[in-house]
Amino acid sequence: DAGVIQSPRHEVTEMGQEVTLRCKPISGHDYLFWYRQTMMRGLELLIYFNNNVPIDDSGMPEDRFSAKMPNASFSTLKIQPSEPRDSAVYFCASSLPGQLTEAFFGQGTRLTVV
Amino acid sequence: GIQVEQSPPDLILQEGANSTLRCNFSDSVNNLQWFHQNPWGQLINLFYIPSGTKQNGRLSATTVATERYSLLYISSSQTTDSGVYFCAVGIFEGGKLIFGQGTELSVKP
Image (cartoon, rainbow over all chains, first blue to last red; front, side):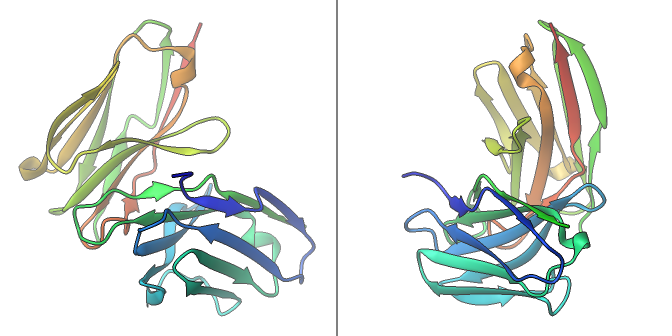
């Protein structure tokens, strides 16, 4: 398997613009997770899905952030409107179901909002 | 919530030296993973180790779940080992992880 695939790898956008990050999980993984990495807060969970259904979005920082998973092989994280403080690296991860399973991460999307 | 503390925060080694990184967590967990974030930002899985000991080449890890800590050993370090090492724990679904702040390792030639 190619692993978790994220796109784009880098995104530079102007404040106020809409940004969409994309993720393809590992085939057969029922769980998909979106994480954000910043210098101040480290790596933190934003939202996760089980079988395409959002389970916990308590980590989503504001209503400007939304995530969808229309099918088992695709998820998006959208920021509208974007702000400079949203600049970070956004990671997608996937895992098999169950508590005793290993998570695998994509290469991340480095977002810069100017 | 669960607290994850890693030590030391920074470490500088000469190539060939050995090191031990520590991860303490504040509550019982079902899942523990070690990651290496390389200078390009990729998070690379090193070990999935909720308990016991595992080895992979020059790296090994031990988790003592009853005492709430895990150790990552790096032997004969190489410059390519440089980067940040993260410990992450979970108590629910496998991928729902709480990360420590990381140990930044720099290996000098």
